Image 1 (cartoon, rainbow, N blue to C red):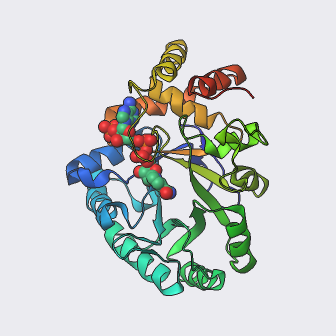
Image 2 (image 1 turned 90 degrees about the vertical axis):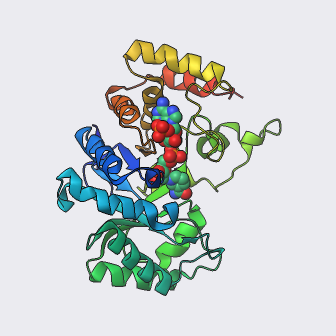
Length: 308
Ligand SMILES: NC(=O)c1ccc[n+]([C@@H]2O[C@H](COP(=O)([O-])OP(=O)(O)OC[C@H]3O[C@@H](n4cnc5c(N)ncnc54)[C@H](OP(=O)(O)O)[C@@H]3O)[C@@H](O)[C@H]2O)c1
C-alpha cells in the first residue's frame, strides 16, 4: 500500500483508509474480519464518527478489535465529533467536544485517539471554544492530531486564528460522480453549466496551499449515498471506461475508480466504506495503479463531464 506523510501530522499513512460508517451492520466477528483484512492489505487507518449508527460503529469496532490480535499501536484511529442528528443540532462547543471524545474513547476501548476531526460546521461555532477544547485534549494525551471535515477556507482561517494545534486533515466528498471539488476550477465563469458554481470557496486549492491533507469520502457513491456507480445501469459509459482501464491494469473497476482519486497531485486519501472483505481486497489493488494523465481525463469525461 502506498503511503503519504501528512504535514504536521501522522507519517506514512496509507492512501486508502477504511471508513467504518457501515460497520454497525456487521456482527462482532465479521467486523474483526474486516479490520484484519484491511490491516493485511496495508490499511492501518480507520475512520469513525460519533454519529455513525449513533455510536454503534465505534462500539462494534471496540468489541471486534481484540479478536484481531492487533495491538493499539498498530493502528491509527480517527473519529469525528459534532453531529447530533438525534438532538437536531451540530455542536462545536467546548463541553460538547470534550464529552464527545470521552464517549468515543469508551466505545472504541482506547485511552487515546490518533486523530479527531470536527465533522461538519456548527453554525454557532466559536473558534475560541474549539481552541480551548483542543488544547485540553492534546495536553491530557487524549488526542494527538486534529482536523476538520466539510469545512470552507474561511472557516479554516477563523479556526486557525485561535487554535494552536495544526489542523492537518479536511474530509470532503469526492468521487468520479461527485466532482464538485474540482469542477469549479475547470468551468469557471461559464454560464452554460452549473458545474462552474464554486460551492466551497476553492477549498481544494486552499488545502493544497496550506498542506492540509484531503480525505475523500464516499469515493464510489453517486449523489448523497444513492448507491455505488460501480456496475450501476445509470452509468454505462463510466462503467465501460472503468472496465477498459481495469482490463489494461489487471484490476477491478472499483480499483480504477479509487486510483483516479489517488492520481490527483493533491495526494488525497480515499476513505472507502465497503464492509465486504473481497471488495476491499479488489479496491486495494488501486495502490499499484498510476493512471496516465490522459487516462485520468478519459474517466472524468466518461463520468459525464465535458471540456469547456
Ligand atoms: N465526513 C463526512 O461527512 C462523511 C460522510 C460520509 C462518509 N464518510 C466516511 O467515508 C466512508 C466511506 O463512505 P461510503 O461508505 O459512502 O463509501 P463508498 O466506498 O463510496 O461506498 C461503499 C458502499 O458501496 C458499496 N459497493 C457496491 N459495489 C462495490 C464494490 N464493487 N466495491 C466496493 N464497494 C461497493 C459497498 O457495499 P459492500 O459493503 O457490499 O461492498 C458500500 O455499501 C464512511 O465509512 C465514513 O467513514 C464521511
